[in-house]
Figure 1 (tube, rainbow, N blue to C red):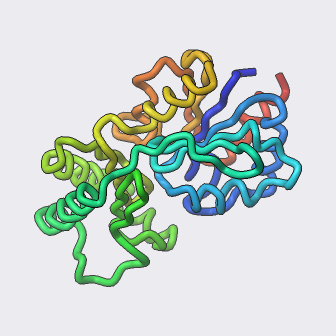
Figure 2 (cartoon, rainbow, N blue to C red; figure 1 turned 90 degrees about the horizontal axis):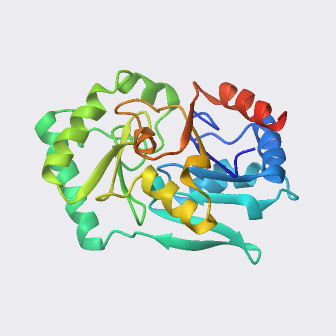
Length: 248
């Protein structure tokens, strides 16, 4: 059994923005008895609590669970009966405003997003350590998000244009209709490495599970580390992988 298994969230443990299924929650509870588990994604802490923690049974071993919201720019652990912040690489208000201006400029220049058209919730969301730009809004229905950029070409265009105007920031693929902006060098590889240091676990012994372990995918950064990786195509494959770990 690996000393730490780290999971991407959307399209790995859950469908996009959806809660864990009872079956997945039960598998994670069993895995938490045997080893430490981390979840990393572009969402903020409230999204992690809603999708993951609130779906777990009251007796689950939360001391073995680690949450890395905003693509690893923050880390939380369960201590003294609450989720305690270990670190957060928070964007200043000035820098967050700079990012927001760049997003609006790039949206207009590329013609990919028209801010005059109503969206499903906020398009630009400040998450403390990250700014997320969602083309159709944070609350867009799954089918609309899935149709907007199935081949990632629009997000790649946004990523390239934003990277050019924001050289001091990292611009990464987010969900199916979003990009995430953090300070330079803050990504999933950073979060994985920071947690490995905190737990005194060799990076090469960590297993990372994600659905976007491909060039341009939002799990790509992990490939720069020595962590073992397991590519999956949705929560059903993740469930099978967890079951295989539990049978060892």
